[in-house]
Image 1 (cartoon, rainbow, N blue to C red):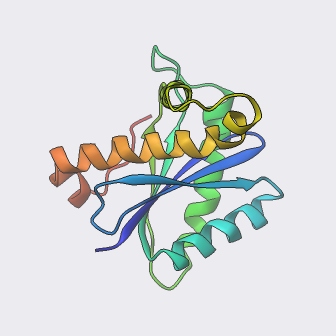
Image 2 (tube, rainbow, N blue to C red; image 1 turned 135 degrees about the horizontal axis):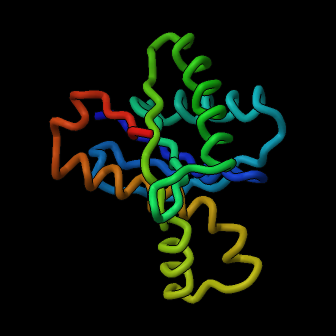
Image 3 (cartoon, one colour; image 1 turned 60 degrees about the vertical axis):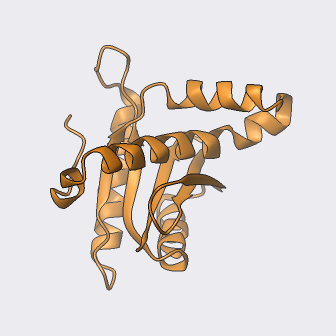
Length: 156
């Protein structure tokens, strides 16, 4: 089986997480520092190739009431550019938006429970949030395998 890559796109960093080959467990990989869209996309392409990724899941930030704001628009632009880059690659890798409501809150809580504080916690938060997003996606796939066959996209 191939892996799933998850991204948590922020203003300064892109948190990155990867699934295991069975697509059951997520683990954080770290962050990509924003440089430029071209360089950010190139970094993602390298990860897709290195880990033999079949799907990229990008956290889609919505407020608790389901509305979208400026950050969601930034993520939509990022996804559009990444989709274009990945669709021109040898093997088309779909890029899916996935509801990330409360992922950072969950990651923050998990890191606090693990005893991380201060700078160490801040440095790892984006990657941990990506892992939370990915695990949510993987759990959803396990519960509803038809979802994958339909090439799901998060509805706006």
